[in-house]
Image (tube, rainbow, N blue to C red):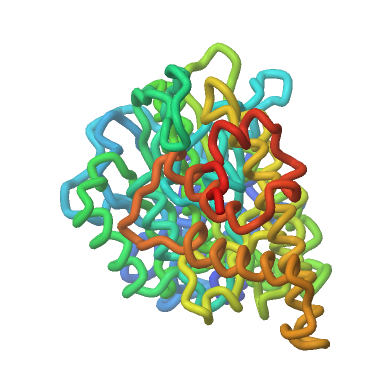
Length: 477
């Protein structure tokens, strides 16, 4: 029976309360818990047996009494109110407005749990998203409908990078113009409505304030829906926050036909909250104490991105996670790498040398890049330039290791040219200001500029016609 209150709890274990199982109670069902002072707290069913129901409360258990508390099963899942007024608003991790402008004026409420997209209904991601950052656009291209996480570490500038991507990201349609010199780029026209859903989980107040101030200062807040779950919020709220954000993104993409970029930071805090809840529930831990269902839980979030046949909207995900101890084999980045289509790895050594953004050249990749670049999408030489930059920078790493053993003076002239290329690649191509928004033409032109440090006969990954078209002729002595 719905709407009937039941008095008394079996026991209280931190934020989890155990009560007798009622008829037709469902997993993830919303529950209202009342204490003796008539305070109302919401929670949701996190575990069920034949006789008991475990409910986790959104908040503290202070004041709850096992004898006097009353429980009401509301008979519905956690829902988010959605409508045309989503953009430009700030919500907490439960989807409640916290910006002082009141509730969303809409009667439409959606289940936040959602479902992964049916693979049969998916269409292949192909359209290029320009972030304005050369290290991403040139070598690890983001494609509309892709899941491309950023692997970072404590102290690395992933927050600055995320804010810059939110400010600058856009979808462009390209039509090749007439051939020209190396500075020629295709004509550009903006595509459909492009918006951002930003979700922060377990962040400190100053980090949340940084993002909000940055969005307001740059004028993009009107095209962003922000979900903030601060560090002092209950663990369960961190688990609900990304689901609320993705539900908002699904509404904007598939009901309003918008192209949505979902930025979620920090997925490590999400996984820590999942481990905490699993421990409270007494579940058998798996690797490093995380629950055995960590993979499927992450997949339930990541697989809500993509393009659906018959819909002009799309959801692109850019999850950000900090690797504990910079360990890329840690369960969180390890499992994320299996589910997603590549990764952008931030390098501590580059950061210490003052390179921003410190995107590691070799561990980073975008598995869908090949299908979103080239003639009619970015520029004809994009694939070849990217491949050559990867190959040359890989050789730079080998030569630097050799130089650390035998000394730079003992290197051959060809090796010294590669070292010079590596320095120019990091200082000119990778390094750019936080307010510097490079279009794809500028990025590729910079790629050609750094490749001038390598002899022409070493450019084996680039077609000769592109070398003649885009690379300046060598000076005549």
